[in-house]
Image (cartoon, rainbow, N blue to C red; front, side, top):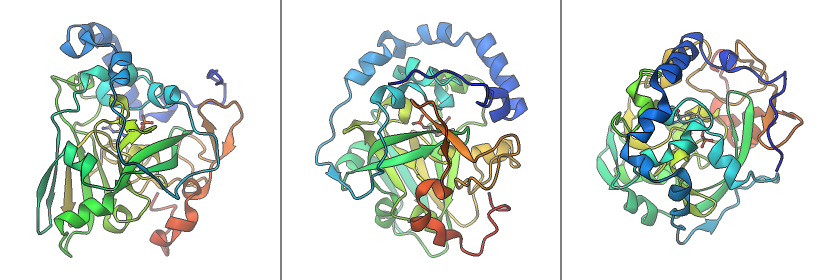
Length: 319
Ligand code: MTE
């Protein structure tokens, strides 16, 4: 594995984050002394390594036809270079502070415009749906990417269980909000809880999954345990972690990054090398663990599968 060496062409964090957010983030990191607070919190009696060792292997996982013919990133890369602001804003923070997140007991409420609103216990999600391995590219808006062997099931299967009404046009997702548990939520770095959304046809697309594991084991905490969304043709920020609520709604729901900086982070957030971010190009990406940059693929390489969802839409406008 190659060790990452920052290069002059990599965007600085001041380029990839709206200014008010990185200013706030710097104050946050300096003022909060995240490590100090963390040590005073019970979760850190265990180290991140302990939390990873303890991850149970998932049963009955079937291979799927969804795989990419590119090297898969190592477990270490996937679990030590993360964005999960609830656990800190540095890429290494989620691994360092992973033990703060307690993924059991956990329920996911599915409600809103549906016939059968339901509260799912996490163990029902692990045993009541057909688990598959899906090897997907994850392309972050910050112009890095990874290949990750997720374990999960199509989101559409969960939606079927609650029987959406025809008035349900969008799906809204909400992450856990618990500042006592999650050190990052003790400051308003983001407008907590983290929220995301999809149009109903996007949510029902077979590529969109709820992931409950990776590398055959339950999801590591820093990757969004115990259940997260993975939408591989969209920038990584759409793949919301540690979900507690999924609501079927009529109107396009507000989403975290879009509310902070609508000019920079669109609701759709489809990976598109032809539409630059206002402050940097999206034409290329750095695969974590590699030196040379790769060309970014339209819809992250899933054009054949998803382009029809956006037929007739001006993708410069609906970025
Ligand atoms: N979900 C929550 N709740 N909080 C976050 O900060 N970060 C997003 C997304 N989901 C984030 C989140 C971003 S910006 C990215 S790129 C992906 O998670 C990163 O997923 P990974 O750390 O598993 O690679």
